[in-house]
Amino acid sequence: MIRVSADFAKEVKKRLGGETITNCYQCGTCTSSCPVARVTNRFNPRKLIVQSLRGKRDDVLTGEMIWLCCSCFNCQERCPQRVEIADLIYALRNIAISEGNVPNIYSEFVSALYSEGKLVKVAGFTEKQRENFGLPPLKKPDVEAIRAILAETSFGEVLKVLEGKE
Amino acid sequence: MKSYALFLGCTIPARQLNYEISARKALKALGIDLVDLDGMSCCAPPPIESVAVDASLAVSAYNICLAEEAGLDLLTICSGCFQSLARTNELLKRNSQLRKRVNQILSKIGKEFKGSIEVKHYLKVLHDEVGVEEVRRNVTKQLKNIKAAPFYGCHLLRPSELLKFDDPEKPRILDDLIEALGAKSIDYLDKLKCCGGLLRGYDDDLALELARDKVMKASKAGADCIVTVCPFCFINLDLGQIQIARKYNENYSLPIVHYPELLCLAMGVEAKELSPRSHRVKIDKLLEKMV
Image (cartoon, rainbow over all chains, first blue to last red; front, side, top):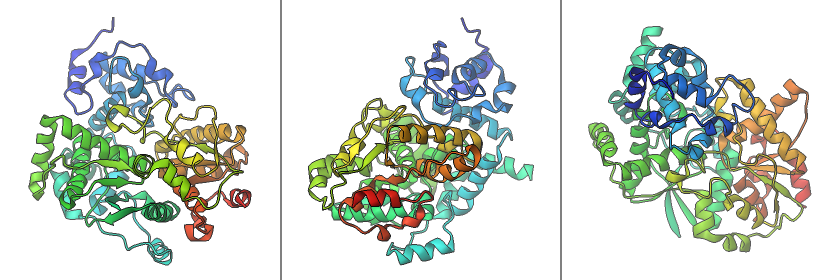
């Protein structure tokens, strides 16, 4: 039996995406379906889940493992217990980020979405190229609307965490 | 002619004109009308879900609202956008509690998710609405000599219960659409395994190792090209090969093409009209084989 340390498991279960964590019976179908686990032992979804269930909060949230999922959803597709593993990993990342554990690339995603409403900026050169190929001019996102939405979600808290880090 | 609201996303219009040009040309030629709506933002894919799942759902739902207001179904080119939008659409249609939560957020800007439209990927539209036979009829240049390795990527197929695109373990749609062009759709080891693209930026070495495995296996199976549908698969396999050559001293020179590029070429569009320079691995070898 897995010794469940109720506090962290409960915390994860309450999160969007984390609801199914306690369904896990550790069969390992996830790890045997995982393309990342096939090439490195730095990532193992079954272990990540058992660590979470056993309440190893700090190890899970400050370690590198939660960031090594490639979001392919193969594990989630095949899990016999319907644990939504890829979603569960998003939930763990959400908690880690809210506590200031933010890999650089994710800080970049956060500032791009907040400042542009998009993740990739279109270079002036590309706009010219688009025109040359007869593509229509790009419509602009409504950045104000996006910011208003983000402010109503936990993204707003993440912005504060990132500001505090600077 | 059926009209769709086009969801272009972030990466394709900024980095992969080859994909945007070919998709627009091919769909138009096959009777699909694409409408560019104002205000569409990022779809809020895995990188944003990783930051805040609630924000991802709300931003994604916001974009669906824009299509609902226009009374049009949404069509995506990027598989990443497809997964975010189709998943949100389905989740919010099924789960009234979640819909309430998201609508409370959207009410701040006067929007409401109603659940009145569908989100579709263009491959599904080509396969189910245009039809494989109609695609075949539009081919003027059979790609008889081409052995193409189809690569579905991940976010087109999974989670299948919400996306309902094709059989997640044995998909056929891309294979059928490739064969409609006269090309041979070949089987290869680990055909459905992820390319590792989303690890780029966090662990580039790991992303490259997964890409290398993909290119190596398609190459061994005798592929003339890998056919992609996702811009991140494209980057990891195309730009990836330049990096593989440097890091592993292995030169595959295996052209990576998005499906609509192949489709346009088979419909007689000149390669130079399709922004061939968007490719880091030259596609000349492939073009020569088409003559």
